[in-house]
Image 1 (tube, rainbow, N blue to C red):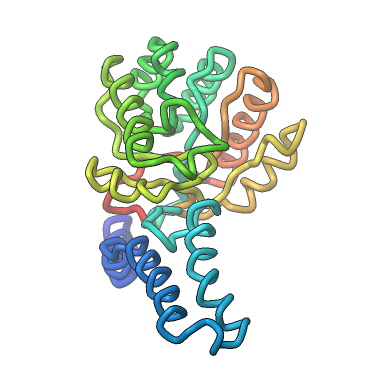
Image 2 (image 1 turned 120 degrees about the horizontal axis):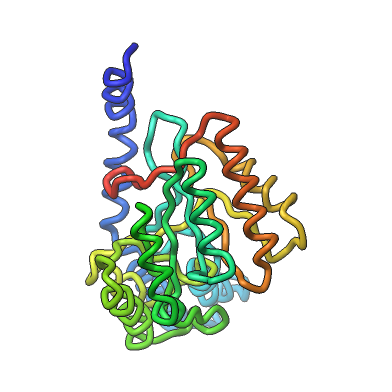
Length: 282
């Protein structure tokens, strides 16, 4: 079977799943969750909490809210809004994504490694860092890679309760910083650690942006050496996987070593790093 026929067969077989994904993306899951939360509390008032078993009262009152909190704080969950965690492909391809740059101590070395392995990646940049290091962003683009939006200030601890104005500013300030450098407005957004806000879905829809999660990440912050992060990433390698690694000037040696080892592994097992089309995201 030639490559063209195999590709057509793959598209045919994957079509039902992709249609279902598109339908689910159109559902306002966040609005539904909030409506259920309000309806549950109104039910308690209507029936009278004293007439209900305490367990029923607790389930009705706290259950929907716990689901909302779970959807906001747990990465890659799709309970409140669409999030892509893989892409459709019949080939041995992955999407390598690199967060938290640009960093003078890691970005140039990572770009050299990507060139060496003929790999393409998306750098999810922090807006403030991009504004401070415009030449690094230009070099990322010059070498054929893309940039994604990783908020302007990377508010890891506080982003989850950001209001609509702050949510919009984190998106728009990064877009403005990248555009000032010469980058096209990115369709990709990844919040810090995958944490969402109640106003993120609408903000992304208004800007025609996509929330990008991951299939596997190294979790480099938990290890002083690249061995365990590399194994976590290896375990996630499969066609269409989205792999996540991080930049850090403070841990430059370890982060560069991880990317080097990952690219060597991918080459050894016949995988290439590509930039997927938006229509292929799942």
